[in-house]
Length: 234
Image (cartoon, rainbow, N blue to C red; front, top):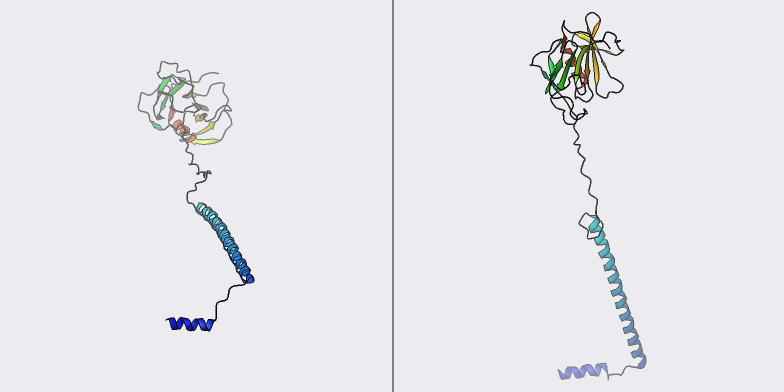
């Protein structure tokens, strides 16, 4: 081993001390290398920060929960309507028939409140929920003024001094009729039905009682005038 070392030293020659220029050059190279390393470290940290921001934005945009203060508006639930229209059904009438007029059908829950040779008054036993009739109307017993027609159906003959209005002719059973709306009515109508001897029967439906126009015609087709019925005046 010693022989090999001696041989290498003889080949390399004696060790030479570095000159001042060599020392200065070595120091300059060291400073340059240090500056490069610091620059790369700073740049690497900035790239990492940008990458972190981009990743966070992508994460939020992709639909994952965000830790930010902003909230995402949820779509409103579809509104549901709770309002219900009043609708009345016609049913067969099985009670005692009135005097001047007889009926085949009445609205469900209604009864004959008053009858004579001039008028037939049919009323509900209590106001229907959502109806437009005043509170306490119509009367709930036959003794509570059947001459008050609010919220009711009234049958009568054409008054002796009453003119026949102009209107579209419709079929009411096997007869001819007209369904006339008064200017101040919304759903209320008066059904005119032609009777023998150039006379008309009138069926007045008050506003808001829940009958469709087809039901009004159906009801009128089931009303029959008897010999005892009389015309009023005025």
